[in-house]
Amino acid sequence: MNEKIEQLQQELYSTLKKAEKNRKKLSFYRFLCYGGAVVYFLGIFVFNGLIFSGNGSPFMHDYSQNPNPTFWEANKLLAVIIPLFVLITAGSIGLGYYYKKFTEAEQTSIKRIIGTMFPDAKCNLLPSYLPTSLLIQSNFFGGIDSQSAGGYSFGTVTFENSNRKMNFRDIVINASVSENWLSQSTIGGLVLLAKVLYKSLFAKRVENIASTFRGMFADAQLEKKIDGTVVVLPDHLESRLDYLAKNIQALKNVNGNKLVMLEDVEFERYFVVYASDEITARYVLTPAMMLRMTELKKKYNRDIMLSFSGDHFYFAVAMPEGFLTLGKSSLTSGEALKDLYDDVVTAREILNDLKLK
Image (cartoon, rainbow, N blue to C red; front, side, top):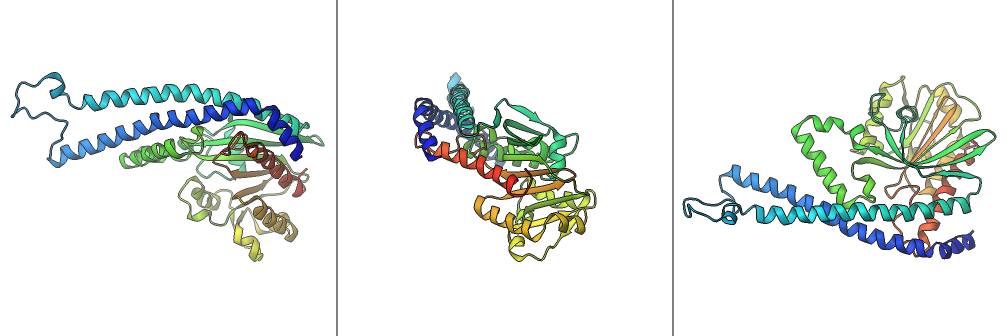
């Protein structure tokens, strides 16, 4: 398989080289655009702070000393605001242009990689809205209801086996879905704004700026329907302050789900289990199943979430760099292709190894 990856790397070298150049330019213009926005909003806060403190501002003209100022003397603030807006505008134009260039090259490469490495897969990289009902059924995203906007999918890879489908999506959950409550107060709005500005500069991907979750989301049909719901989450979930922290309270109040202890010390080092009843949890999470999940957690080395509901299985992994992307590795080093291949293989093995194929 390494030979195939190397061959693909050579075939896609020129495309990947252009993508790498566009990614660097994208990062530069992103810094100009959002860095300028950060400076602008910080300036507003500082300016208003000086005014309300009674200390005045160096950008306000003192008419007592000079009652007949020139235009620029009377409007000192414009000397800062105009260049800043030019900077932000230039950054946004460059950001949009190079983002389009980069994603076009990236998607061309991903389609080629998936088609070559996984000939039995169907790959669709058209962006689409993710049904809210699917997210609700997974029990992974607390705070989402039928009135929420749901999530967004950047692409899907589908495997069909015995008339059953396994869908692997690269999704993002928008902040508006789980953080709408923040905008209902002035302080909350400021916190939300600060969070967006911070993510605009440091998020792994441009698409993640207004989101609270980016990663892989998979679903598959179970071989046998279960009577109830079982949700397996990372054991440190309750300490998080993002959308995931809402899951614990939500699970306690929806359909009577409750915390279940399964007497497997190593399993409970990594996972916490909520289920509609203890009998269903023990039926699904056999000692062999818990051992396999523990092994998968160690192998995958990421926080994974699994749930069983009716005749469906759901699986999610947080991937800030995206699932159907070329990641954060240098595109010309070959690591980006290998990382994408490993992600798809590992995710598929998880569903297969849990006897869900």
